[in-house]
Amino acid sequence: MTFAELGLRAELLRALDDAGYSVPTPIQAKAIPTVLQGGDLMAAAQTGTGKTAGFTLPLLENMSRKDVSGQKYRPVRALILTPTRELAAQVHDSVRTYGKHLPLRSTVVFGGVSINPQMMTLRKGVDILVATPGRLLDLVQQNALQLDRVETLVLDEADRMLDMGFIHDIKKVLKLLPKQKQTLLFSATFSDEIKQLADKLLNQPELIEVAPRNTTAERITQRVHPVDRNRKRELLSYLIGDGDWKQVLVFTRTKHGANRLTEQLQNDGITAAAIHGNKSQGARTKALADFKSGKVRTLVATDIAARGIDIDQLPYVVNYELPNVPEDYVHRIGRTGRAEREGVAVSLVCVDEHNFMRNIEKLIKTNVEKVVVDGFEPDPSIRPEPIQLGRQNNGGGRGRSAKPGGNRARNSAPSSARKNSNGGRPNQKSRQRRA
Image: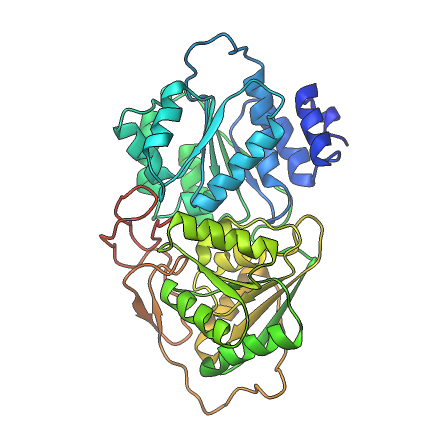
């Protein structure tokens, strides 16, 4: 099958040809016809399989069928919501890439930068808006836009958008939208709880799953290195140096942990930068740019990066600390092995995290290979210790002690009154919304 057979107009086919794409991926082949028909959709596919094009291409096609070139003011007709700034920017890049031959206007808005230029752009009118929820609601309060003409709503990384950290803002946004609209949910993972919640928000949605739910890509080689908790940094530096790893994305649970590990790696002679919710947007953009260009060898991140980094040839992902929510493991390692390339995902697992690893293996239905590195054999006399847990996807929250290696309920953390950089709103429950 080709993109032309899917019913896309010539301008979109030209843009795809310019980008070097001619054959749709499985998720694109299944999602595009459904979106073109106008129905609601829940689509699940592994990361790196082209989900973004699966909704941007038919969205652009449907919107192009209405001639708006003569309209003086352009109301927002398509709204795409993402959980992080990086992912919002990435999605908007795709909208611009595929829509460059079309007379449609688009923009992206998120926190961490001045709101005034965003307000000016929106007041001129745009057809397609990509946004993070907090900043979107701020702009609505500033009377910079109205959402009563939206025809299509897209929730990208829908599992994160519908969890307790975002659901309150999502419900606020839904009240601003017309009742009659198309709603599209795209994600790599859908828990049963999220599916039940989505059924209440969508109208008889079609469900597309191009791979078993919550599975990882076969082209990713997964490996666990058992190691004592106080030797993880030493082992990480050894692996990077001995293996001559040139580009490594490393995940920690907390922002403080990311900063500390970055300093330690730099002291070991390994160029490193940190990216997390407490960093300014300028610092985050620079860190990511330096990492992509090779100026920085190691990028240390909290789970904010699992939903916003798209590097086709990223060879290595390291779980320096395992996530306490198993689905986050799928998103983390999905940063490698993208665009049909091979990748390696390594997890450094101490005795405190054994239950985390068992829960992950249960979710992905795979027993990950355990390899003890010579010289880093775990000490069997060391006992498990409690792990401090907030909502660990970006290292935020006040934290709470978990039982040794235990897995805490997804929404049981106390709410926080901190403001987030996604629009200045308080956090909700366990999933902190700092984007």
